[in-house]
Length: 238
Image 1 (cartoon, helix red, strand yellow):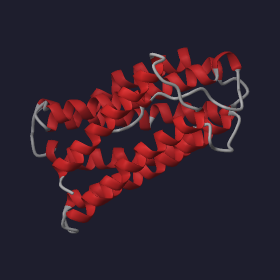
Image 2: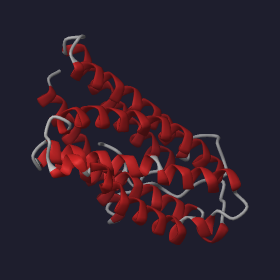
Image 3: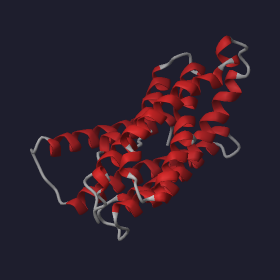
């Protein structure tokens, strides 16, 4: 498995998920909730297995090989989180699903963030530019946006759910600040490349997808046993 092969597999997986999701939204086909969520897990397994094959094809003392292995672990944790959030798990109601998801996705995203920070910081630190000097200031607008979004769309739905209330607030101001911040660093460190832009788009779509989840699944204080369907479009192929 080469890096090029992995990118191709990831791209095909994303294309397949987009086509499938649009087909369902357009009413051209329908599947059961169980099959819908099992297909989601299958797509995640494709990416995880591809990452493992990429790791095995690289030299074990290669830093990229270590990154591939860590990314596979991070994806594995988020795949478990996807299962917990889905209609096929026995975890319910939705507030319990989201509480466990914070832990599982949080662990996976910490791995993603660490890899992005380690990779980009090594590159940027070698470039004494204005950006490298003020790189952490990029976090300020992210924090402002995250706070406004949380208070408008998340906080009103979490009354009497203290663990989820404080957990999501902390998550929003740490992991979901670091992710787009380091993605901007990566975009800069790759000289504003297309691949850097793709990573940045993924780093924005991931917290945006969770904003939709919290804003819809628990809307008006509802806490149903089984959640509504998730969207493949906003999940983390990144």
